Image: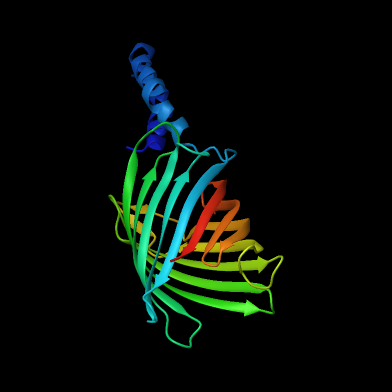
Length: 252
């Protein structure tokens, strides 16, 4: 039974005149001792800043159209130690010659932790397909559109799909290109929309899943290595939270 149903039963018990206070007291004690702590721990502290530490990489196979990309992300509900997610993802990429587009077919493994002191985790397997459209506006604005479709396999849920659209914008501040020693502004906004809303056992999710807005400063360490530090605001259908983000972007 879900905790909210326990609360409904708890409220209704005193209305039953056949249940006396001596009989009711052990039930109340059990609820306070065991159920209430779970309710407190399940509530996300939206004022607490989280932190995501990330490594992104990509490469191509010599002069071919094929390559690989991937990322490792250690996400925390706080600045470190309270696991939100550990995400391992990789994919095979294909970029047609003389075309400003790149396709990816990939797989991700996501370990999600509960908020608070609980060490409970769940595992999600995720297959995804994406298309990336880079574009330059003027001589300084580096724009990228990313469209991603995910097939999500979660414990005790039906197969779920999700659509994602991300608009990235990098703006070099002391150069017109992202060359070595360039400082740049990195921005993005990503919208997540659920496909199937029925996830099994009479449960449903909202059409809107979440939205992420990100602002950061970046620095080009080498021609194929960049670092970014910024903040991302994530809004779901039930909570909103800010995460610091430290990321390394590596072209192998």
